[in-house]
Length: 345
Image (tube, rainbow, N blue to C red; front, side):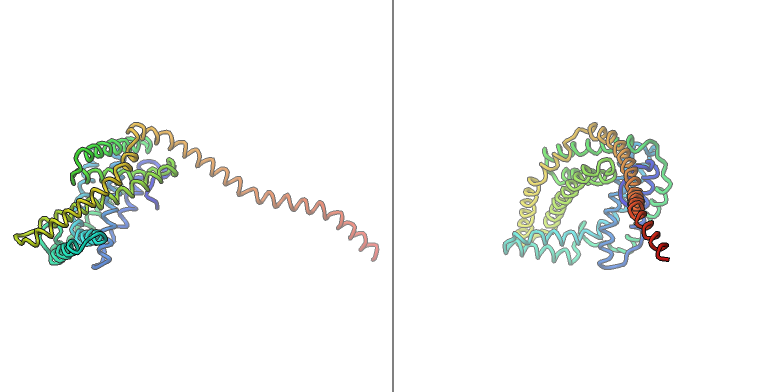
């Protein structure tokens, strides 16, 4: 089933359905090797989708429910993060190769070798991947059982409208902070707001599919760009952390940090105008749009269903009319033939 609310379902039914469908896909325990890497990546995305869903309907949840579920899902993401960090680092290093000179290529090879050797810090591999995955799966299964019986108050228009407004408000605030100070922390907060906007636009796509699909595409592309900015920040920090007393290591680290910052600056310039457009509408306008479009789309769906039923009956009526016309035309001829046969007999 799709990651979106249906026009005809209630808020509670929709949240339960979407949450359980998402978590069911992640609960199947992964195998080792490449399959595990894919599972970790997909499961982290699943956790983000469920958290975006719960954030959207936060005002309809019982007191304290949002905080509990969000913290538990965030813990799952934290457990899985080290299992993916090394692969992200390798991909980020590869992205710098295209414009690298010989000295930067040498520096990147040094850092990749350090990472492969299992250096200390956040990028080091987890001591027991099986235990981390097992604990994550158990927590996902427990969350799935809780969310399958989740109680919510209100309608999709009321509750989701408030959630969209809150996300728009958070996005505008994060954008202002990132423009004033493009620190790694502020850019990370901006990316989280963009990701939430992307996924929540998918959840209410039925309100106006043509518009919501554009917002999703823009937010998805921005999320990927800002994600690259974040990965570059992690790579630069890893390089700086591995610069020991060796002059060569320090020079290599400085080259990598400089290359990362240059790439980040280009990505900032390319992404910020699009972020401005994404969060251009005031929060109240976003919720008002949903309040008007959701019932309008419901009415359109009813009318389209009626027209489909009418269209389905038309071929039958047309065939019947054609048959009657043929019978009217051929009936005199049949009578003439019948008289000739009787006469010849």
